[in-house]
Structure formats: C-alpha cells, structure tokens
Length: 492
Ligand code: ADP
Image (cartoon, rainbow, N blue to C red; front, side, top):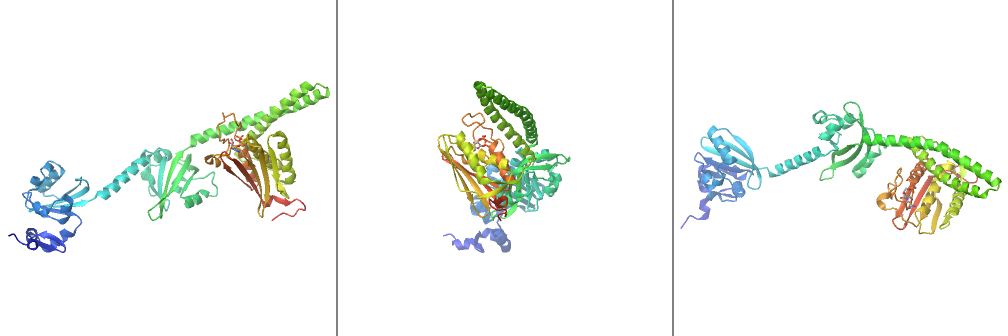
C-alpha cells in the first residue's frame, strides 16, 4: 500500500507542494514561490528539474511530479537548439543572468535567467497583454505615419503628443522638435471662417469639428488646411486630448481665388456691353413701334427678353463675386413690405400661368432694409418654387409675425430636396442636379445670394423639404428692422 495522499504533500497555505520539494527548499521560500504570479523553475547543473512552481504547472499544462528529477531536454527534446536552449546554455556557461522575450506556445513571456553554481533559476512572466497593447500602439503609430494627412495628437493642455511624417513634411518641424510643445504656439492657427471661435464650442459639444484654418510653418510661410478634429476620451468618458487630421488645401485655395478673380473680372466686363445692348434695343424697339414697323418691334421685344435674362445672369455673377469679397453695400431705408411682396407675386403670377401663387398673412410693418436686395430674395424663392414643381399647380406664400420676427415662407409641392443636399444648397454654385442637367437649368447662385442678403439684414434662412413632396423655404427677419406700417415708433 502506498503512502496516504496527505503524507506525500506538504502545504504552502492552500497549494499542495510535493514533499521532495519541501525537503530541499525552505518553507518560507516555497510559500513565496507558490504565490507569485510568475512561473518559476529551478534546474540543477545536469539540467534536471529541482523546483517547478504551481504557476508553471498551469503554464505548461503538466504536473510537477512528472517533471521533477527529469532532464529538461529529455522532457522537451523539440526545444533543443531553440532560443530557450541557447539562452540557458549561455547563462550556465558564463554564469551571467540574462533575459529574453518569447512567444510560447500561444502567449508572450519575458524569461529571466539567474545562474548559480547549483544550476539555473528561471522566472517566466506572462507579458501577452502588454505585448498586445504595444503591438496595437505600433500599429496605430504606423497607421498615423502612413496617412498622407498631417495627424497631430494633443493632450488636455494642448501639448503635442504625436506628430506624424506628413505633419513633418507639411509644417517643416521634426517630431522631436515639437513633442511636448504647445500646439497653438507651434502652429499659430487662424480660423478665417470662424471668427468667434465657434469651432471650440462645437468641438466641446459634439466632440468633432471640421473646417478650414490657416497655420504657420517652421519657415514662416502659411498653409491653408482643412482640419478634422476629434476629442479623444477614455472609457469613463473623460477627455484625454484631441486628434487632428489636417489636409493641405493651399493649392486648391489658390485655384479658387484665381477662379473668383476671373468671375469678378468677367462679370464686370460683361456688364457694360450688356447694359449698352439693352439700352439700344429698347431705343430701336420704340423707334420701330413709332414708325409702325410692328414685326421688327416684336423681334426686338424678343431680343429684349433674352437680354433681360442675360442681364440677370450677369448681375447675379457680379453679386456673387462682390459678396464673396464682402464688399457689397446695402442701402437701408424703410419700405412697405406688404405692398412690395404682393407686387412681386402679381408679376411672377403673370409669368407662371400653370401655378396659382397665393399669399396669406400680412407683415403689417415697414421693413428697414435694402428694398431691391430683399425683393430679389423673394423673387428667387418664388421663381424656384415654380421652377422645381413642374407637375404641381400651386405655390403658397405665408407671412407670420410674432414677438421677435417676421417670417415669410414659400412652399411648393414639387421635386423636393434630398436630405443630404439640404445643408449645402445655400452654398455658392451648389446645385442638386449637375450643371449639365437640362431639366432644371441654373447656376446655383440664387440661394447663395439670397442667404447672404438675409444674413446682412440680421435674418435667417432655412429649408424644410421632403424629396418628391416639396419644399418650404423660410426667411425670418428680426424685429429690429421692422417699423409699424402706420406711425414711426420702432417695434421692440
Ligand atoms: P439654381 O439656379 O440652380 O436654381 P439656386 O441657388 O436658386 O440655383 O438653387 C440651388 C439648388 O437648390 C438648385 O440647383 C436646386 O437643386 C435646389 N433648389 C432650390 N430651390 C428649390 C426648390 N424649391 N425645390 C427643389 N430644389 C430646389
């Protein structure tokens, strides 16, 4: 009969340790070795296992009774010649401690070797998690490095934490020159379209901001960039910093500038001959009418209508380029809004026999503003409503006055505007369908001009639309530009 199980084992707290080990090793040492989270193995000079801790049993998936007293290379002949084999032999020969990292069999370990005249002590630390994190970092870093946008990460104090190769190329600063420095000092960023630092507000509230900026390079030159900035948060939702991906759009901006200059010059060059032509056609038309030459007079009337279209186009081009440079002048004087809007609708009704254009509500106020420019806004909106609803037969205009504003809405029952286009239609030259589309000819200037005019009057303009159902365009003007129609006391 063999010994009872309990006699074969000593106990290091709750872990059973074979008696032969307990004999050789001090119980306090055993207690420590059994408790550490590292694997521990001791080999004697003949490469025999003299100690295998509990953690190693787990790691190797073998009971220590099967290992103790056996030669490691007999147990693991397949390891002869491997890194383990080389390192252990080197340490045994030189009696120098050593360490190395190894992937075995499915996890990463850091192996520490401590040689002594008795043999080798080996510690194995599982570093898989650490390795994975390191690899993830390496991967992220190489992703950032291979991106052609300048990628810059900053901490909460706006200090630069990372700066990829594209950032080095774009700004001329090397990574080591800028790490830890204040990004705003290095890049001296200016936000031309965001004078009130709305970008910061948006970044704080939504966690993201995309827009244009001008930044300074190391050599003092400037680059125009399109920046996409995101806040970086930890799992608890606390902000750790921000990452910006900046694309150089300097060339594109130069091109746009040249295009704008060309449009400005061309539209001004066109204006003089078109105005002269218009004047001469009117003169000739009147002369032919007086002389009873009706056929000629009619031809000239047709020419006159075409010239009017051309004039409108040229005027819009002039407006667009003047607005772009911010040089437009608005004459602000009081005018009777109700009369003007009804006149506009009467005129457009005559030119649009297939639609009934109705108007409800009254402004009951005079508006202090640029009469011609504001008229242009409503002409654009009603003309568009008719143009983009060829299969419908009505357009509804409504005026609503409330405490703070006067709102005019223009509603059609036409093609509508797809959602993804709705935020862009007030942009310069923006069209939902391509310019080549003959179904709805246009140049995408009307809404941009209207938006700028309304903005210059302190008002707002927006659209609600459902594709295939129709659109409602709204213009709201602030009470500060309204005067009661009767009496001259400003409405406050
Ligand atoms: P356009 O001369 O092209 O009509 P606008 O600036 O007036 O230029 O309008 C810009 C774009 O907005 C148009 O190309 C059209 O796609 C869209 N749009 C404007 N008004 C309407 C409307 N009432 N219904 C549907 N789409 C519209």
